[in-house]
Picture 1: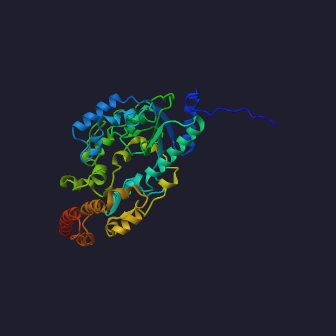
Picture 2: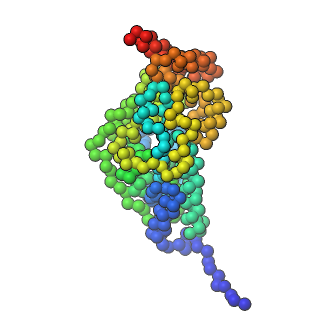
Picture 3: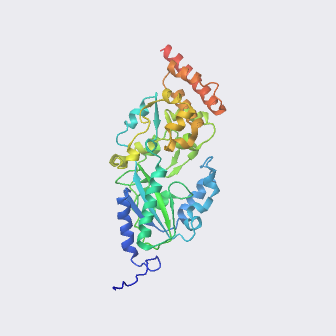
Amino acid sequence: MRMHKAVSPTTPDTYHDWAALATTIVQWGRALGFQEVGISDTDLAADEIRLLNWLGADRHGEMDYMARHGSRRARPAELVPRTLRVISARMNYWPGEARDADQVLSDTRKAYVARYALGRDYHKVMRARLGALAQRIRNEVGDFGFRVFTDSAPVLEIALAAKAGLGWRGKHTLLLTREAGSYFFLGEIYTDLPLPVSAPTTAHCGTCTKCIDICPTGAIVAPYELDARRCISYLTIELKGSIPEPLRPLIGNRVYGCDDCQLVCPWNRYAPPTATADFDRVRNGLDDADLVSLFAWTEDEFNTKMEGSAIRRIGYERWLRNLAVGLGNAAGDPAIVTALRARVNDPSPLVREHVAWAISRQESAVVHEAHR
């Protein structure tokens, strides 16, 4: 009878070729649909100071979770004990088949939805791919400590991605790359593996201030400094209550997020369309939808149509709030006033407040048009 020599299973303690593994992880990541993967250490001391100064200035608005976790956000090993390295990955999302963004923004009767939210909820897609990457690593080295994050925990993802060589922080505070601009999602794997780190890249914003100049609400208060309280993405997504009245006219027809600082960025001229079908496939015609049509949705319609969409998390009430602001900013139209009046007795005080404001704006616009 032929005997087989016993082979000890590979474990992180017996694995030694970390440099080769790091290279292979990048290859595996690309095969799983990530456009780039990099590895960083966990030293975010400089970013921690920046974070604490930002919080101290109350620029996080009502995002209490930002302050609640405090410096833990900048200390990966406190969030996940024994973390030595962070594997960062980016995945392009620009929907190449969507209607031209500038055309939608210029049509006041249309609803503008940030391009990242037109397809499937990125949290699910990214988390599944990162989990698959972690499994491939486990198959190679044996059981190891890790956790996967996709905008789902106190993580300084842009700082980590920059350290991992995936790009540089632009003046609008988003990550930028020469190959893909800023139209991509980020995700991380915190791990206890002693992998070699990637080399960071250099910054290439130069003297350009287009993102600062274009911001509708002046939220980019200085290069690399964002006051979230004025940011349209914060106002339409994170803010739970009433949108400050002075900012409402500046929001225009942006009903979920804002892309202005990205649309104007020269580096996004080179951003390729996504290769991920979940992001390229526009749901419910939201790349070219009428404000009035969306405002007519019932709560059941909203919940059904937005199933699997990042938009669903703001809920029906805030969705109507945002649409009411968009309708108030639209060119004067009696049909819009009719649509708004249908909700003057909405059960939500928040919706009623914004509807009343929008009706006042529309009635003034209609009168103005009649006297031209």
